[in-house]
Amino acid sequence: MPSARNSGRPQEQRKTLDRVLSRAGLMSRSQAQAAIAAGRVRVNGLRVRDPQTWVDLRSDRIDVDETPLTEAARLYFAFHKPVGYVTTRSDERGRASVYELLGELEQWVAPVGRLDLDTSGLLLFTNDSDWAERVTNPRSKLFKRYECLAAGELDDAQLARLRAGVELDDGPTAPARVRRLGASGPNTRVEVAICEGRNRQVRRMFEALGSRVLELTRVAIGPLELGSLASGAQRKLKPFEIRALAGEPQ
Ligand code: URA
Image (tube, rainbow, N blue to C red):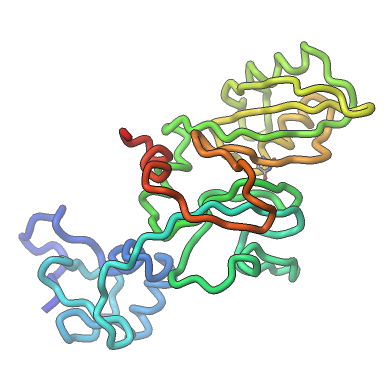
């Protein structure tokens, strides 16, 4: 029998069935809930329809579509997103999705954070939701570095405002690392690194200065650089890169 809810067994050894399926890298948490409700999952031979059923991977046998669940291989890769692709799998407006560029994948993967349609650069994908949470959590203080082309000539006082934090409609931004890269005709090239990941944050920071972002590329996430990865290409992360992004010792 699957472990009953609130049974006396130590809680930390068990997880809810939907969480076990998503952490195994098979599908997202909401897909797992739907699969369980649809009767596609058995625990110790019994069909289970409650996603909140407690299971213990060490003692309970779980089958999905009659196939035993084995811990799916973890996937972690870096992708160079081109401009003109949405980060979601499907788009209500029919715009092209980054998933069209990823090709056939052995596992379900999700993007780690998002880049806007008009932003290019480094985007991570994984099926390890705990790792993704560590990478995106602002408390992990992982700086995301962007190269921006901003409209007009920005003076030093404006760049100092970006560094100190600007007021946005969802609150002030945390201090940013900002470096002038030079002029480009009438416009200004600036490198900005932020440790938050709010919606359209970099664009809104420049709008708060009275400017506008004309081009935006994410060139690094923490210690990981986009480097020479070609636009539209992907590469698997190396074990030391996975550990470094999670803030683990090398
Ligand atoms: N900030 C933005 O404004 N857009 C992005 O895509 C990423 C960060």
